[in-house]
Image 1 (spheres, rainbow, N blue to C red):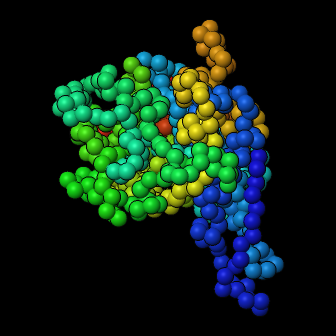
Image 2: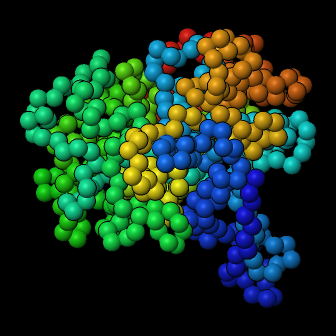
Image 3: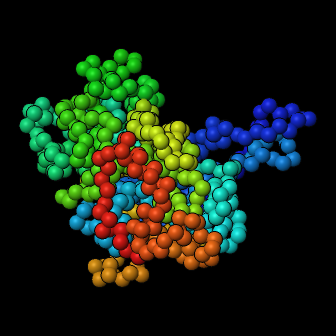
Amino acid sequence: MRVFVTSLPQPGVGLGACAPWRASSKTMWTADEIAQLCYKHYETQLSKQGKPEPNREWTLLAAVVKVQSTTNQACNKSVQVTKEVVSMGTGTKCIGLSKMRKTGDVLNDSHAEIIARRSFQRYLLHQLYLAAVLKENSVFVPGIEERLWKLRPDLSFVFFSSHTPCGDASIIPMLEFEDQPCCPISRDWANNQLIETSDNLKVPEDKRKCEDLDSLVNKKIRLEPRSPARELANGTAHCQNLGAQEFGPVPQSIINSDTRMAPGGAKVVDVHRTGAKCVPGEAGDSGKPGAAYHQVGLLRVKPGRGDRTCSMSCSDKLARWNVLGCQGALLMHFLEEPIYLSAVVIGKCPYSQEAMQRALIGRCQNVSALPKGFGVQQIKIQQSDLLFEQSRCAVQAKRVNNSARLVPCGAAISWSAVPEQPLDVTANGFPQGMTKKGIRNLQIRSRISKVELFRSFQNLLNSISEDRWPDSLRIQKLKTYQEYKESASDYQEAWSTLRKQAFGSWIRNSPDYHQFK
């Protein structure tokens, strides 16, 4: 576990004064500091098991960083800031509908962002156990309401992802002098393509050749002009950053207009593609060549090879967390208010500030009448200039005379800051290396599967006397995972409000998948 401690100057306080002050998020950390911390943690704390094969595989990385700021009690004009990775995930895969199980023991969605969030929930459960059972130091302190807890006021959590989340946030304008995101699209193909209906999310075969939907392999990124493939400053490939940094945010109107001009006079000729497909009930993509290919602001489902998935895009899920919190329904029983992220940091990759703002905040901006404690967060969104060395761009830049196909790593790694078995490596939703016979063994399953997180929650309950349980858990006798989730009434009300006002087409799994005990 790597902890960074820095001291920041305390403005507005002279030698003879000691006015209270708390560092702003702008002075507490930089995007590069968050990225560097996560990359170092990946190298030092995650075992080689599950990591990509050199020069052949790539992956995505996501993490949650705890930031703590403490004012020096001796009043020496400084604020001490500690940054610590508390959860981490890698992965690019997602299982199809036919592989989902009603026992809750398989990971449906193994994209890095989702793995990191589930690992974060595991961390929060452990922290709640420390506070409520062991009475030890924890990120939680007693809330105002009896039997409930809240986050310590000097703490915040920053979410990091090495790449923009799939879905709406990845629909980024491309300018005329840049490489196309996939193979050229002819107008004849566009006019003759199959029109998707709400009952058919299949993709034409010729389109599959342009977009590797399972891995986004052909989301083309080129190196900066006149720069070496290996940047001397940090020894890693340096991908071009599109959109916000060179030309500023490109407004949505530009993407959809006939003019398609970006600030500075450059023409917007195309957009980076996302393999995530519009869900039934949404308007759907036009499929027209160039910048009008995608419709923006829509809910999308992650792709699968031959077998459609029921997993919403990472852009959609991050937007949901920005309203409901990252803790989920189970933990909400014990919490006075949701656990929100204070910021999102994206690593070096194609990027648009406008697209990130739209995808994570803008689509829910007008949601109102949420239960007490819930709200649309004005989360800070920043980008780092540091590239993840296991990203597709970085691995591609290192390959010399290698004819083997570059593919996404099939494994997903979960890491949580917990004392017992912090590392968890899976493939196809199950612990890596498991045989078909082993799948039947209920003792062998991912630590961040629904059933295992539910088991940890039940262990927490069993460690606390019933008279200290929250009221929501004492009203009725609860048995199944579904019953425990539904009895978190404020959370469910907030989720219902969000769906009605912003995410009406959100795909929800059948309750049959949540009846395990």
